[in-house]
Amino acid sequence: MSVQSQSDFNPAKHHRHNRLGSRTFHHVMLFLLTASAIVPIAILFLNSLKSQSEFGQNPIGIPRALHFENYLRAWDIGNLGQTAANSAIMVVITVVGVLVLGGMAAYSLARKNPPGSDAVMLYLLVATTIPVWLYVVPLFFMWRDFGLVNTRFGLALIYIALNAPFSIFLLRSFMINLSSDFEDAARIDGANELQIFSRIVLPLTWPGFLTVGLVVGLAVWGEFQLALIFIQDPDAAPVTTSYFKFTQRFGRDWPLTSAGAVMMIFPVLVLFLAMQRRFVEGLTQGGAKM
Amino acid sequence: MQQTYPQPKPDPRQTITPKKKWSWYRFMQKVGTPWLFIAPIILLHLFVVAYPAALSVYYSFTEWSGINEPKWVGFENYRKILFDDPQVWSAFGHNIIWLAFFLTVPFMIALFAASLLAQVKRGAMVYRTLLFIPFILPSVVTASIWRNLLNPRLGVLAQIGEWTGIEAFKIALLGRSSTALITIAYIDNWHWWGFLMILFLTAMQAIPKVLYDAAKIDGVNKWQEFWNVTFPGIRPTVLFMFMMSAIWAFLAFDYIWILTQGGPAGSSDVMATVLYRNAFARFEAGYAAAQGLTLSFLAGFIVVIFIILRRRGWEI
Picture 1 (cartoon, rainbow over the protein chains, first blue to last red):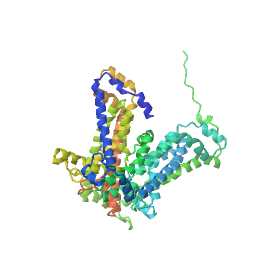
Picture 2: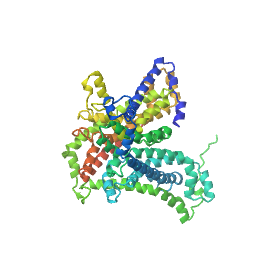
Picture 3: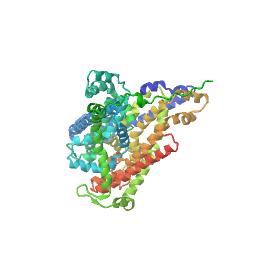
Picture 4: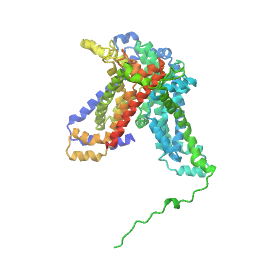
């Protein structure tokens, strides 16, 4: 949608008669802004390939020799194998939970509209404005009593709940425009609700599910605050909090911590570049600050 | 002249076939099954958010370590926040600085970049992609990048100081009480403004092209065009993000905790970092709950201001 509307709208036309310099000005300014956004990431990448002694003399330039062993060291010392697996497990539980439970709720709210739907929507709307600091203290002690603190499943449950309102809103908006003809036809053929959901609605609204999955997965992968509170056990910790501890311990070995950071953002960058449009669409509709 | 009267419309209640008898099957079809679909996630949300939020109200009136039985102390915690804890007030002041920063700097950069980008055709998609990338980085990585870049011995500024011989560049921006908070705000903003820009750009692209044509016929200059055509078109988005930014300013935590943990000497403490320490390091959970409520009250206050302004006829 964004790409389409972008080509329709071209204010550049309105400035065709402006001085030639004006368009150049735009590109120069945009280039500088882009450089300010990208150069720090590029320096991170360059530093991840230097030896520590070279880094001391050449902290921002291009490496003279490539030290890929930084990545192996960071993987071992930073315990990335374990923590990345922990994060991946939480991403999977959260995304599956949000898509299944949120998808079911969105389907019901969009297509069945049972009595009380308006109250549910209002609750979800209000819920998005409740700050985490209002409930996190009692929640922590509740979770401790249930034995859910220091477990990946316990934290993922919280993530599912917190991502529910955004996911339900977005999925519902995809489903509400669906024609009911297919459903009616399937119903006449004797399909039950679950079959209609999985065979008719899901195949027609999968872009919404993909968008929600990407946005929620990205948010969980980078989440710090709740992970800091709910997981102290290093064996269950996600990449974010364990990387934080790692940088505190090995703060001086920048090539090492940089290599760890590059490995952490690599899957995110690849996914983003591959499915940029869905990411941007989902994130802007969620209005979520990360 | 023949006068026509509006025909009375048939009462819809009478045209519909009379209500069928209540049956278990029909009930499940219309109410039971749909609610079975909705219930799981709503119950989970109530359990994770609404129930502890209600508990928070109760605990805020108690002295509670999180382990012992909560002891009722009335308004003691709130009295302490208001009159007896200079840390909270100093943190509140930092939240106000944070608020002032995030209501101005990101908006100016994002509006500037979006209006440039809306007028560029070649390379627009590349700019958009690259400018958005900082937003998707996890906060720990962004913080780590900038802690290194701002290092007083090996960072970028230190290198400039090295080349130019100006010692003032070799400043520990994150290590000084006078600069720590604003430096963290700068780092948070580095990751944030690209997202804001995309929101504004999307809103700008929805402005009808004819408005720009009309403005051109009227012979307006670029500045007038921005204020009279572009800005009114994106105003709802700008004001909504204004409100959200104001709310978030009271909840700020991640970057501050990662970079300085409120230091040096509390100079970058905000209400959330004070709350976090009270709850999870000092085990004053009752007091922390009262602080959480205070924080939420401030965030709610912002929402109320915006609702009042909207009632008064602001188009938000």
